[in-house]
Length: 249
Image (cartoon, rainbow, N blue to C red; front, side, top):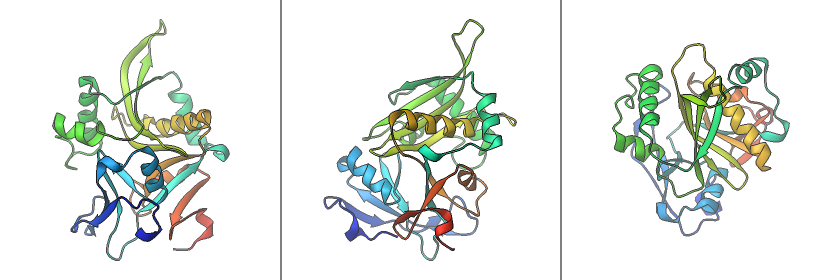
């Protein structure tokens, strides 16, 4: 893990949280290292922090700092050499008619209702399935960096936008796009999540950005290990971004 003395952000301070139950691996305790103060974490600073394995949740910028566990490994997709798998190509074909609209962060009641359906359908009992409007806003709609909200809608026969199907929150960094959170209609056979990542990879390519940061890959978590299917990718190991074959666990 990168040491604080190696970070070029001398004006920031860092503290470790108290242990709390891990959201991804059962019967484990987690801790986070938090960067403060949040008002100093502008886009350039945040881009540097992401390179060192940090992520954000609203105004909260953090990275795993667990005692005796290094299961959470930052993963980024190499945009220019990415090649979709067969199943990813199917997802792209399945949802190619979706219309994407890029917005600044804003509260839309329709988005919030979709968020609640997603939490209840995919993560019932996970603690977020009854989030209030304030909790939703603090989690997804507060940011001091270059953030965007992307809504995906069905295309009607006349070519206009129809029903809302998915919303993605993303950050545009100096060297890539960072996927913050995506929620969608919890339909069993739909590949919305895969399509969202494919869309972000294509957007990064159009913007000339070399990476899409997908957050933490956790080999032992079914909710998080899907990220390794987007290849080629790099993992942040001991402070260095490297191909998976370049290290042994």
